[in-house]
Length: 339
Image (cartoon, rainbow, N blue to C red; front, side, top):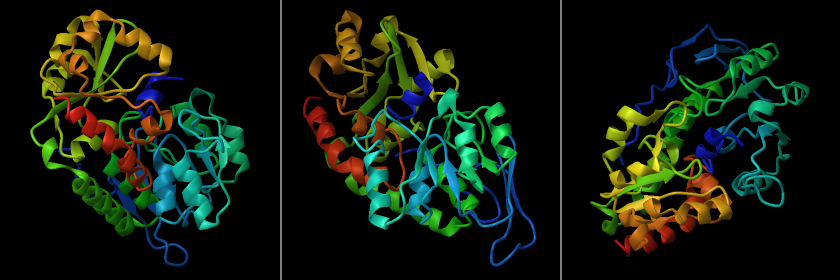
């Protein structure tokens, strides 16, 4: 599994202003004359090309993360979604997706193999009229192959780097539901702000990860998992700005560096992290330099062992946020008590 996919799932100060209406939040968007019915065709530019959506989409396929959840919240259940086994339950689906679709009475989407093994033929067989992939790792060849059959909305700049409110805005634009999408952004913002606690105020955090022995990484505050923590009232340790200058890891919204620089995290009151598996956790925590980080020493660490929670807390969308909060905030409270 690519580390960028894991960083994207297992994916306060965070908002981009959304240009709702005539312009797409992800780039230049123009509207043509009204098409059939009440649908106005739109063009959404991305880093890989321009999606021209001539008619109201009814059969959509979502790739990457977060897009299926937003589409479902807007009342459009995809006919196909990229599978994500890192966090899926016994049904094969992420539980918040399975529950929402089941409750709606719609048919569960077909699961599609994704990433570098993207099953283009299976997508084409679903006869989609739109493919949504604004937070994904789709490449140019995959984009071009799918665009021969349906408009494809890819990421505005780099793969796996879109901010959560921008993603929701782009999906709303593509589905002709800009106002409803803006309402989802407002609702999520309000929900996260309401979950903040007075004891979080003034505490700094770093959201870290590792790529194996001797490595460390720090997510930037705009990366979705870090953005969720910031939205709950904790303050990103400004060390990320220094790290970005020398150790930026393109396509991950993070800096990746050697464990010998672990002392740069000495001022982080809290650390948030995840491990690829129990072996990775044991190996990482056994490293003396890692164990010497002040937050690690005192136990002010939030590191869920449940892969489903890791995945859910790695993305901000209408279905994950309510699912996450009741499970994530108790872990934060335990870490805060040890500061």
